[in-house]
Picture 1: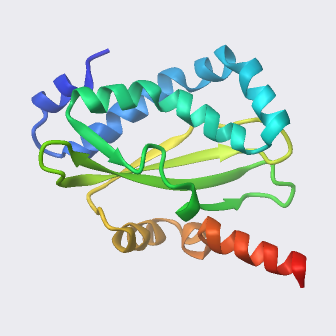
Picture 2: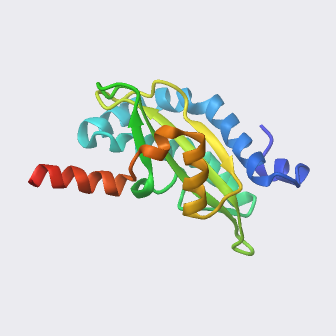
Length: 179
């Protein structure tokens, strides 16, 4: 596979979209392989920590991407797949077997610190067992601030628009538990 650095040198325009395509290709080729290769570790993580095992999986999935970004002199902030606290989640059914969580990282040039765009990761998952019903998806955006990212994603998905950030959702959950 061509390195991200080589791909970016060939495609001077649309940098964030080139990065998004590179990540999409990596995910398409590796998402199931990583699940199978790390099955025991992920199942152990799920039994010990529940849904946090999906974070372990995403860290494994993005390991190569982080190496490629570093070689291309790019830095994601926060680390891919993104900041869990501002992520949004919703489900396709009441059982919780087909959830999706959207989170993002802004990509910066290491040399200048200049943001070049944002990578949104959509991870589909199950709350009843450790299972990814389908491949994670990627969206590349030219927007780089939280407000503009939320605005664009809200235009793309009505579910995203109406979902709460994790910290807000969790605060409401705790409030309901206490009162």
